[in-house]
Image (tube, rainbow, N blue to C red; front, side, top):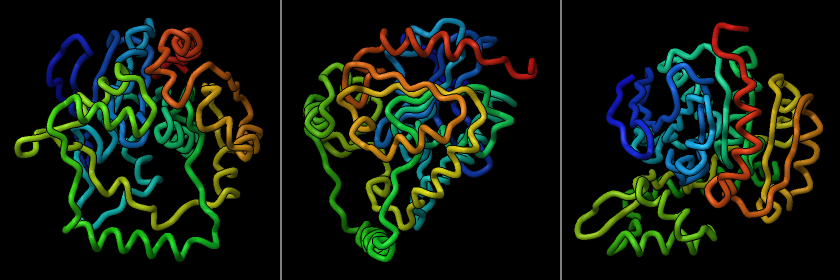
Length: 295
């Protein structure tokens, strides 16, 4: 692990795994409760900038997931399979020398966190997610169509024109329009998420992240993972977010032995839009996690 620097928004870390380099941002004392934070699709580690300083006694390390922020992209010809993020998480914890740790995930990161907790119950002390609980699924009958779309997208990638913006403000405006975020929340994500390209700005995210997955898990497979989660779990949902609109999520929740679900006012990014309300619930929950080696 390399410490790249420290500023008002925490320490910048670089974690070298056996197969790729992951950038991260960290807050809190080194001897605090270890929490690995995983952001949502097309976001980055800055997703936790507003929340992390409110979590007392916690050593929170927020990753830039592969293909996001300042982390490495996957090799040419590779897709971003959902399950491939899980060994990345375990390797990041190894690089931090954390045998046991809590997980905090938002959206895609929440899905990754739930599957990590299911696959590695001996390592995960607590599971907290925000607007995410398991991966997206697809009708099995659409599997051949999805595979074809994924192959075609990969084939046409070399000639694809990527969006460019004349200014930071233009990129922020585009993010606001795409996600419904406030200007302040979008600014936090965009400042870490863009890079200079010619006379303008482009996204740091790997364009392959927008591709259709060549293979989705079925809902029965996902339910099997839910039943394997052993850690105490807390899920925060926005009352105008994504999960409250999806009835099938109730079956997922029912499979988890020790899950608490809380509904907060707001949309899909409550930890950015109302970090204080999230911290009041997440702080005590995560602080109750055991330090590595003590249990």
